[in-house]
Structures are given as structure tokens and as C-alpha cells.
Length: 241
Image (cartoon, rainbow, N blue to C red; front, top):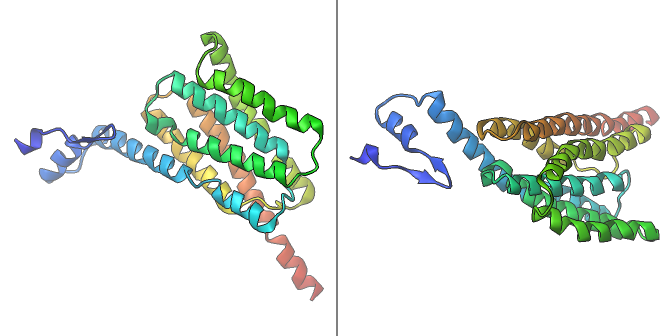
């Protein structure tokens, strides 16, 4: 009787796993993989609430945005907005996209902080956030033509790609990653890697999986730059001694 009672929590079905374990056997992959995918999905959502916090704190602590590309962070906000709107429109499980909501909020806060430390700003810089505030609610509400929505989502992969390129170039040009946070970059890379697995398990559209793959590559490059360039000052100090 007990074995037949369904055990579900937040869309996760533990029934077959507990039945197998109670019988002294290891759950098969058809039972285990969807459960692992759900658990990892919610783990990403939980971790996403603090992903950009190290970057925000580093800027506030040093009162500097040295080496940071403003356009990269602005494009990131646009990319998160489109991706979140698309997932809401497709009615995917929250575990498959939930982190996008938290990442979007943090990305907006981060851009606002960069604006603050970029004073004085040109008039054209103020126009971009005003345009975003006017258009974003319509996109998030899904009040656009379905075909246009699909095309818009297709462009968000390019948006995330071009959001990373200016920062990657800035790092390469300066041979320094400035105020970029290693911890934030590490969590971005890990999140993209895990999200590929969970998206496949949740039967998300191929375009969603492709976006995570782009994230793995671009975040991985930035992470490698941080590790490479942060070692250089120490070597130079030894030479001068």
C-alpha cells in the first residue's frame, strides 16, 4: 500500500525512486534522469538568486567599473528579457527557466550601478533604458505576433553572443579583466553547463539548448581570461624585485 502512494513535490515524482530503493534496487535511468534534471533545475534557480551578487559587491567595494564593457551588460539585460518572455510564452516548467527571472533582476541592478559610476553620461545613454522600459513589458507579456516572437527569440542567441564579445575584446585589449568577478563568471559557466542537461531532459526547444551552449563557450572564454590575466601582475612583481 505504501509503495503505491505517489510522492510528488514541486513537479518532482519521487515515487519510482523510493519504490526501487525500498526493494533494494538502484532506480533505472528512465526514473532517475528526470528526477536529477528537476533537482538540478531547481538548484540552478536557487543559485541564480546570488550569481551576480559578487560582481555587484566588487564594484561597490572598489567604487570602480574599470575594464567593464557597458554595452555587454546592457545587451545581457535584453537577452535575459527575451529568453524569459519566450519561456513564459511556451509555458515551460519553472525549473527549466526560473533562473532567468532572478538573473534579469540582478542584471538590471548591475547596469544601474554601472550607470552610476559612469557619471557624467551622455544624453544618448539615457535613451537606451527609457526605450527598454517602454518595450520590455510588452515582450514579457507576450503581446506580439507569434512569428515575430520566434524570430525575436532566435536573435537572443546572437544578443548573448554579442553581449560577451565586447567584454572579451576589452579583456584581451587591456590584458586585464579589471573589476570582473571570478565567482560570478564561474557560476555563469557552471549554470550554462547544467542548463544544457536540464533543457534536454525537459524537452525544451532546440533553440533553448543552443542558447545554453553559446553561454558555455562565451562564459568559458571570459573565465579563462580572468584566470590567465590575474596571474600576470604577480609575475611582474617578482621580476621587479
